[in-house]
Length: 457
Image (cartoon, rainbow, N blue to C red; front, side, top):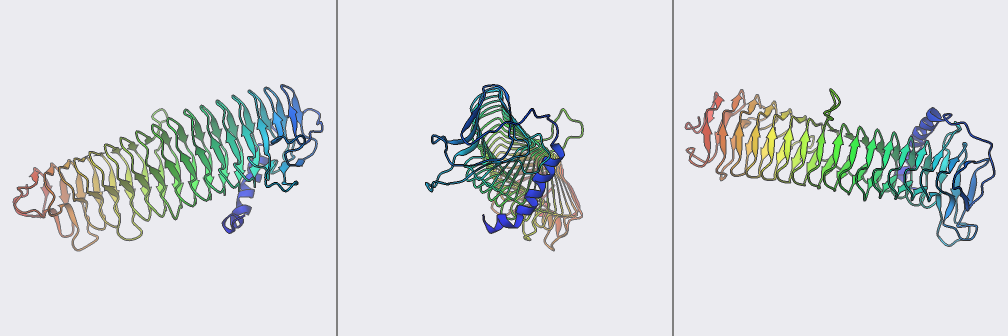
């Protein structure tokens, strides 16, 4: 176990104990019967442990599981634990509980804390479809806590703690994970590696060595999950067309709150829930939201007090609407919205009290309308790209530096159209074009007090 894991194991065990004690007692077990290493349970029947099972080491008959559960069988751990050990010295261990069928159930009816699977390869390995796992802890395994290779399975109230691999690894379709914990694992808390239509809802991925959540496949849903203090990013979205609603990401000192190299993903509220919020990223060592992919939609998300940018957009044709960037740039020189890609749309976003610019636009062909930048450390809007359009935006009271400007076009950048904007109360001046007599860029019908050069309108 790493020093990092050892420092936090007490915290994670407390979470697991609390969740299992709270949920325990739902099921009424039948009479317990003795189950040994290598046993196959089912098809069918209710099977209840009368003692802990182990240490299992591919025995008997060199089987690669401690217990196998077949279709329609129900296994009640009854407060006991399945555990493995390399007793023969070959360096290998079996998986703990393997579900090799459909519509089976694994649960714990007893209030005993930390009932589950430990020190095996993968703790719980689901290979079938439409199975259910409830209130099980999988901890200190050499592989993953829970591996799901089938479709339509449901895992509720599970805890995956301090496993060497992922907390939860999904390689199937239409699986649902609810109210579960992925804590202190060697890779990620939750990884969807392959498959579509999976849903992660009301889970937590905390203190993992890498990401809290990593989504490599397409068309999955993440709703109301929390990522806290992971070694890399809170949420890494590599796949396409995933939907993220109401997730929180905080305290990742070496990474971003959300990083999205994938395309056509949506980070937004749920339109079917009145008052639903988008995603939030706070107190991260990197950016709140880093978007490297294209054609993603970000609506009503909140980035605050991140060390780097609130929103860093390096991809193209993304849409940002009604997002908030507040007090980002603790390293002293970062923007609320840093738009480095091309042809992005920014509509009705708000940037306040960021240490550098409210909006820095260095790409080309971007369109910004209805946005507000106020009280930022440097400029409200700074343009260092070509052929961008700013219309109906507001840049007021950006006074953090003696050279702070409301809307600024830097030297050598041309073809920009600045029209119908309002800029007042900024420190050095409200509007400035560093390219001379308004021949390189267009300024029309803006509201301001101070300007340079005089030809700005």
